[in-house]
Every structure is written in structure tokens, then in C-alpha cells.
Length: 137
Length: 477
Image 1 (cartoon, chains in turn purple, orange):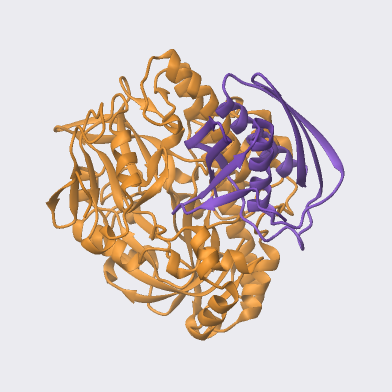
Image 2 (cartoon, chains in turn blue, cyan; image 1 turned 90 degrees about the vertical axis):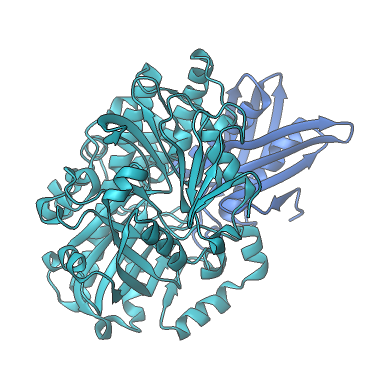
């Protein structure tokens, strides 16, 4: 799987840096990094779920979205492989596809306890968007 | 050492007011020269950030296992005035009442050494790792009881003995819990995870008492040389994580509402006496109670496994003690010669109440509270005793563990899980985990030396060494 994000060394937790041409791709790649940290790279499936989030800024929109992904993944035992994201202002609609948790293929990662606000930055310049985020594991 | 901090004692350092703008009190941390070599500037910054919060008393403190976290540093302790101070989920963490307990057994080293079957059976019976679900069917009514009564619910339901409760901090439940402040989402996550260990640094470890430093206290705690014990390290699982997520959002609005200026969004907070502050505290207490119930359920399973394999009595495996190391508590402490109620946040720090404390059972009054400090997979764990010095200097607090020094990214790159497991096997330590990645992530090399951390707290006097335990076998998520 092509890496669209990189892990930045962080002593206690997992710090991720994502670069993407659009805000939608930035959110989608961050979502992918979260799923990879938790369940590894062997993910597929076509079970669909939709998430709708409204917030007051992009940082909160992202943390609320990822927190909702954590919630659904845990209570429904679903491992997601893809997110199709639309962002309109501070309103997000995400269509996720995934599969039931399989202990053989999906036990290679670390449980993420929460999406930290500390160190969360989203910046935008001529080259596109860049984001740093910390997952508490 | 680090720039901008002053050494004020052998193991004592001060972060002066002004290190970051808006500090109300100086920061103070306890650290040896050796441990200082791996301390990150970010951790000091976080310690200083905490000192800017309204109503903070005396010092923003950190224990020798200090490292860079989010909000508070890991190892951070801060007490706040009830009337003028704030409460913050950033001072507790996502894993509310992550904690550790030690169970004694009548078994000896020779009974358990090299017994892979014991570790395999524990791994099979205690659900561990990402995605693991409980075999216990918890009804919504029982979940409410778990959140209100904590370990007491578990014991009433048959998952333990009455004495266990007197060996838990706060008797295994915080009375201020209010299940109405816990969201439906958090409750949904709690239903399927009662009695599960989780992943990351959580573990269940079979250990042997290798060294006794204080025979009188060891006897009071029920520990003797060569004795086999079991250490359980876990927290409030998804329920606690969701409580933190939900209330962090709520408190972020409250921070603006009450015009509180914070240097880090993760330090979102509200006055302790505000509706938002009270709501978080009640929900946090409910999650803390869920964690105590959870550790009690795992204790029950462990006792059943050991009882079956070794034909020993369930009652012959007494709980030594259970401590919370991610929690906020209302406690009475002496400040400027007067006893006052304060809100103590411990984020990766352990309560260390000294002899004579009201919260201790009668037979531990003379010795002080047992303090349980877990090591990593290949290193020693320790039992210490709480002290009067901790009451005077650190709001009754001490360290909580070894503290990481290597990132998970580096660990995966530099270390090989299979080789580590083989190496530990040669040392007589059996490791069982879901993946080799987990073993690399949690290898002994990624942590500070637990020996050095406990030596510092012992020498500073905020807890005193009682016993050292070394691992024989460990299960991890």
C-alpha cells in the first residue's frame, strides 16, 4: 500500500504527518493512517457507513470525524479501508467502506485511545495542505 | 541538562515563573542526572503550561518518569483550589483510571518458572488486544452499577472477595460518579469490554518477588522472597476514552465561556465548581469506577485460571493493592499549615499516602499505602510504600512506571519482536502477544530504567522501596 503519510518520532504516542493537495485528501489520508495504526495494512471490504459532522473549524472537524470513526469501528467491530470525503465549509460527509474485524489479519496494530488536540496543526500553502496529529495509544 | 531550568537539589529541578508566559507558580520535577539525558524539552514546556492554569497551588509537579505527553506531561501532578481552580481532562488522559494492581499467590518460583502452559491459558482466557470483546455479557443495568459502584459491583456479583475492596484506592470506587453524565456512546463502548485488557502498554504479568528492602512493610503487604505474584495493568477501555473525548469537547466551549486562557487546546478546562467542571468530574469518576470493576473482573479470571492449574484456593490469592495512575481526586492536604480540600490531578503518577492516612485499611495504617510500580516486559516491577514526605511535598504522589524513551516508530525500525521474545525466553521470561510488532513496541529498551526511576523517588523520599519483583511471563494485547 502506498504511504500517503509518515510517522514522526514521538516518545509516548503516535505522531502522523500528512501532506495532500486538497482538504478532502488530507482528511482521507489521516483517516487511512488511523486505520493503519490500529489494524495494519491488510484491509478491504464493502460494508458502508456514513458519517456527518458539523464543526466550527477544520481542526475540530477532523478530530470529531476521527473520534466518530473510532467509535463506530469499536462498537460495530468494523475495520475500514476507504473514506470518500466531501467537505463544504465546516460540514463533512464521509462514506466509509470496510469489513468485519478479523483477529488473524487485523491484530497487528495498536488500539488508539483518542485523538489529541495537542500538537494538531493544519497548514495550507501553494503546495497544498499539511497536517500534524497525535494519536494516543 | 536542559536550558532555563534550575537545579535546586540532588534530584530536584525548578522551572521558574516566566519559562512560559502566564505561569502562576513555579514548576518542579524530580530527576537524576542519568534520567535527565533523555528528557525532552517538550515535557518541560508541558509542565510549565500546567502552571498557567487558574487556581493551581504550590507547584506544577512532575515525577522522575516525566515524558512528553499531551496536555499535562506524563508523570505530571497538580493540585487546584476547589473555589478558584479548574479541572481538565488533559490532567487525566483518555485512559481514565489506567492503573495497576498486584495479586499475591501461595506459589513459589519453582512452581511457575518455565510454565508456558500457564501463560498460554491466561492469554486464551483474558481477552487482550485491539478488537477483543468480553466473554461476559453485561446488561445495561449492570453497566450502570459498574459505573456507580466500581469494584464493589464486581465483588457483589461474585467476581472477588470482600477484602479486595479494602485493598483498592478509594475502596475501588469514587462516590462522586454520576452515570447521567456519561454519554450513550460511552456506555455502548463499555458494554462489550468488561474484563478486557486492551493493548499498548497494558499487560498481565506473572512475577516473582526477588528482593525485599523493607521486611516489616513487606510483611504488612503480604509479600515474601520467592513468592509468585500477578500484576495487572489496564484502565477504563473504550468507555473511559469516550468520556474524555465527549467532555474535552464540552470543556473546550467552557474554556471560552469562562474566559480562561490556555496555551494548549488539550488543557481545555472549566472551574471545578462550574456545571461543566462538575459534569466532567462525575463522568470521570464513573469511568474510573468502570476501570476498577474491569481490573476486578480480570483478577477473577486470573484467580480461576491459577486455581484450576495449580489446585490452589481462590481465597489464597489476596490482592496486595490497586492504584489509579490517571485520575483527578478531591483530597484533603496541608497547605501553609492548614488542611484544605484540593483537586489533585495525577497524569501518569501514583497516589502515595503515608502512614496514618484515613483512606488506608487499619492493618496498613502503620506501613503507609502500598505503591505499585510496573516495569516493562524484561525489567523489574516494584512495590513501595507511601510516605509523610509525599504528603508534604507532592500532594501525596509519586512516579507511576518506567516512562518511554524510544518512539514506537523507532522501536519498529530498530527492534525485532521475534528476537526480543527469544532473548527474553533465554532470561526465563515467556512473552505472549498478538503480534511481533507489539513485542517490539513494548520492548525493555524503549523504556527508561525502572530501577533508576524508583531509586530517585526513594532517595527524594516521596515513596520508599519495599520489594522488587521480576517477570516470569507476560501477556500483552
